[in-house]
Length: 297
Ligand code: CO8
Image 1 (spheres, rainbow, N blue to C red):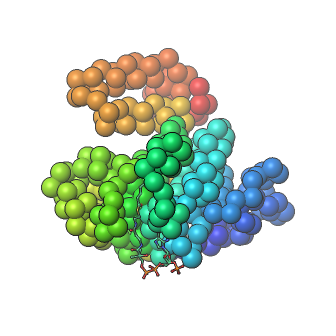
Image 2 (cartoon, helix red, strand yellow; image 1 turned 90 degrees about the vertical axis):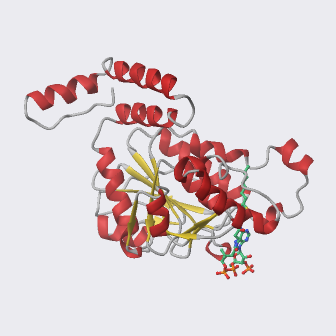
Image 3 (tube, rainbow, N blue to C red; image 1 turned 45 degrees about the vertical axis):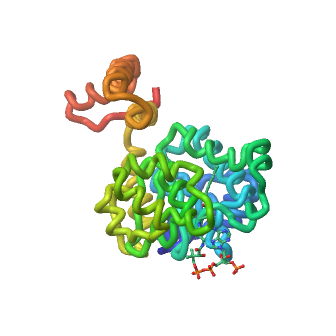
């Protein structure tokens, strides 16, 4: 897979990523400069796209195949919250590298944990930051997405995969079970029989199988994945950010409730769009045969 930096070179003509800080790109004028951006150690962040409205987060512990240690998750949560709060960001892309999206929770870190450590300390509580994000998050998965890595991809709203991606819930091999949604989200994506097979055997599935099962929405050549995912984020970013958030909430409700109450929720959110300026602008623009000018209002 092309790195975040090389895709940025393609998109912006210059690599500006510098250890998690945005550095001034003197003659592009295209890159946002965060003077107080935190210096992350386990992730990299970058703002890309023609409108500088896509936040990219790259998991960056390559030697450990992006194993999801606590400091990584704390940084990931911080970066997601920052992009979520930034009005100029329309959508977030979460990616890893060619070998691994993430090979799971950090086994070395949790090896000696006890039940009471996990319970008292709320082990990996930081994971909730990703699912609490109001903006769309798209996972661009190349290489291994295993255990917590597969669960992290499933926390995202859309999964795109490179053709060499491998998904799995291999926790059973190390005497435990998935703990961040693998037994709950996976059956909702792929159905009970396939989810059982994946969880009980620990077998990996490849990108094309994952697409056939509905876990992944599209598969791309490895080197095209990040570029295509950023394009998708930009496509979403052309719409009203407010209405995108409402749509995301409504779709997510389908996973939380019965059909009857989900339909009621949807209707209320649909009615709610009529309280927005952006709904008015969207329909007016359609009638006037011009592109809409959404204001996030
Ligand atoms: N944790 C820690 N280190 C890891 C992990 C991991 N999950 N995966 C890989 N590594 C490290 C290896 O130890 C190795 O380090 P070193 O060079 O220091 O020995 C390095 O990454 C490279 O790995 P390999 O040499 O093993 O690479 P291979 O290409 O031979 O194999 C595999 C790649 C198949 C991905 C293999 O590394 C593997 O099986 N990894 C473990 C996969 C796994 O079991 N994942 C599930 C972990 S448990 C989990 O995710 C539970 C989540 C629950 C969340 C709960 C929230 C509340």
